[in-house]
Each structure stands twice: as C-alpha cells, then as structure tokens.
Image 1 (spheres, rainbow, N blue to C red):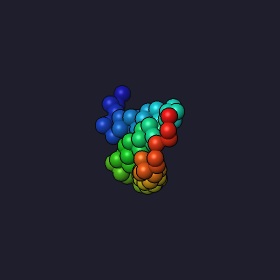
Image 2 (spheres, rainbow, N blue to C red):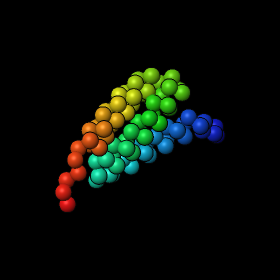
Image 3 (cartoon, rainbow, N blue to C red):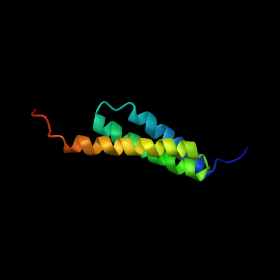
Image 4 (cartoon, rainbow, N blue to C red):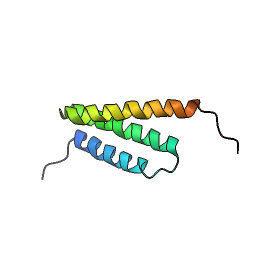
Length: 79
C-alpha cells in the first residue's frame, strides 16, 4: 500500500475545511473558513499540476476576500 503524499493530505485538509465552512451560521466565519479551504485547494492544484482546480479555487479566494472586505466595512447592527 502506497503512503499518501503530503499534497494528498493537503487536498484532504482542504476538503475538510470547505465542508466545515458550509456548517457555519455566521457569514463572516463561513467566508474565512471557505477562503482558507480554497487557498489550500489552490496550493494542492498547483502542486499536482491540476490547473483547473487551482484556477477555480483562486477565483473563490478572490470572491471570499471581496465579501469579507465588504462585510467588515459595513457598520455593525445595533443590538
């Protein structure tokens, strides 16, 4: 049985992080977790020469970053 490479483990970790992000009720937490997961998938995709994986996840990183900036610029609602 062949031992998994470090990049396979990065891919597994990315999958887990993205799955965790989808369980977040708080949109800021969801965006942060999803950004980390997508960034891990970018690294994974580049490492294994899976450029479509890297490209789509880079796009997701940009989307998450955009919405995080937008969320942090919004005034906090009065509690």
